Length: 441
Ligand SMILES: *Cc1c(COP(=O)(O)O)cnc(C)c1O
Image (cartoon, rainbow, N blue to C red):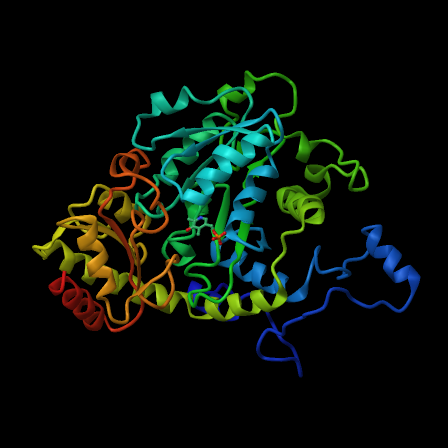
């Protein structure tokens, strides 16, 4: 039976049968027992399926990965120990030294560093583009060795909305997949695969967990990108791609892997090629798995994800409208506001709401912003977003405090920018707390 997202949130991944636990058990075990040597040998020969070591597969982790794959509408998913690991694995599964990719420049700071600094040390180069540029200007950045395009559905912390369909078409014209970090929207508010995106990543640390209990990540594959023909399912062979050399564009997927029985992932696994390589090669070798205990906590969060997203969005919309009318507020950036630059894109991609994160500036100095935050009652100052509790962060005083005002602007962070992550408390209380703190500024 085909189920709606709210039902998948509750029932996806774990289907207990007679006498089994109703709640997903925590298989907190490194390894799994067999009765004969031959049983174990058959697993290593890939003749039987089964669990043997938690770095490669664990029933708790697998159940949660399956739930997220179902929520996104993908063919498979793999959990990682953080969102950073998820984005690293998603790229590294198809890029190697000498390769290049293109990314939106309005992405999470941690991802910006990973792509611009750390991947560069591994010989993988990337070009940061401004998604507001026109197609022609962006398409000039594709090179023969470009392997993918990357963006965030809703950027952290800017709140920009990514035009997924436009960039999926562009990536496919050049014979490469589009990877989208869907952390802030969650599959409840946007399902990037429906707009042509090929691979989705998540920091499950945020709304999916929703209670600030675990750091985690996830990679999901749509199964729609054909790594041999370099086309998206249903698309014509791209003209740009057919002009390319006869060299395989994704040799890691389309030529034999000597470290894995000499198998060719695309030949042996079809639509599961990308996922199988991700687990059987990258996770085997790099090992950033989540603890089963953490996956259990993540799963509890997922059970209420649909309910919570509805409340986050309704609360944030009311708070954004209140901030916009407030004489002490200099500016508000929230795509749910009709005057917002990304409102049109939000109506297309996020018709049921975007997320609970608002960026705004107060009139006055950095010190005024600090006094405002110090006077908040239950709204807390934390380096975190997207959980049940409303919280604030002032990058100029916290994450970016070493920078001058000029340097902040160069980094794309307004000195007065306050990131407000609206929780699921009663919205009247949230507004009352903001109001009393502003009164004491
Ligand atoms: C937080 C975040 C990450 C990094 O995730 P961690 O779980 O903190 O490693 C990646 N992308 C986005 C959009 C994020 O908000």
